[in-house]
Image 1 (tube, one colour):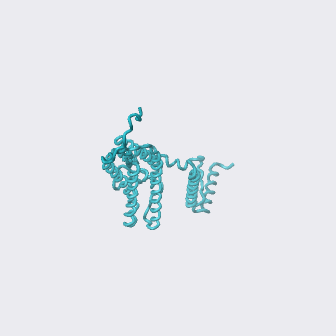
Image 2 (image 1 turned 30 degrees about the vertical axis):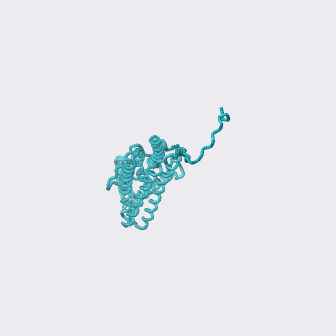
Image 3 (image 1 turned 135 degrees about the horizontal axis):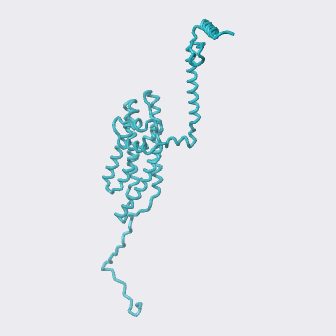
Length: 315
């Protein structure tokens, strides 16, 4: 029977032969893991092959993760797809409302408040609240006017709720859609331009309408010049926030296009405010009352008809 020393020497000789055949091989000692005899393990193959295998494994893992995400992402026709746009908490909504009420130069609403997470929860309820407040305050204005002047005839105008809802929601969706499409078109002309996404544009417009809610409530004060003053202040805050948000995008374009685009944005915002003032807060004309009949006296030269005899007079 061979001794332990002979077996150890024999294994070392086999390892030496393998190293001679493959000079690029790496040797590792496994004496601590296996037996106390100090076996020698030979790893055949270069180190670059192991690096390539690791890269292949990493790429396969990334591809598997990407495929898993694509499988988990729901389609746009499902309810869960739109549920992610309403996944915001109260603090985020209040922070975005505060950012829209206090615009500052160099403070981008999209970058500092949305942070690549636009939502539809805030814009949806802001538009709904504004439409409801417009219709209610418009009717209250007529009620208060009738109390001051009884000649004004008032009847509830429920159609104003529909008009307000259609006007506000069309403005909050169609104008951002047109703006986003124009910026996308200009991106092809000016490669340096990086427009916002459609949801970010809708989110910016939705939050910019919040300042009109307290403005509409203050329009209940029956002082015309004060109503126009409140309207101008609200319009200035809202339009300034839009200009500060859109300026980092349009400044890469030509000066003429940038000025025309920003002027159109402010003009459309002003038309919305003025239209709401003139339509929902117009005073009804006084109710037409028929004039009392006037008694005309006959001329003195016209003879009066003879009186009836007293015997024929009715008793």
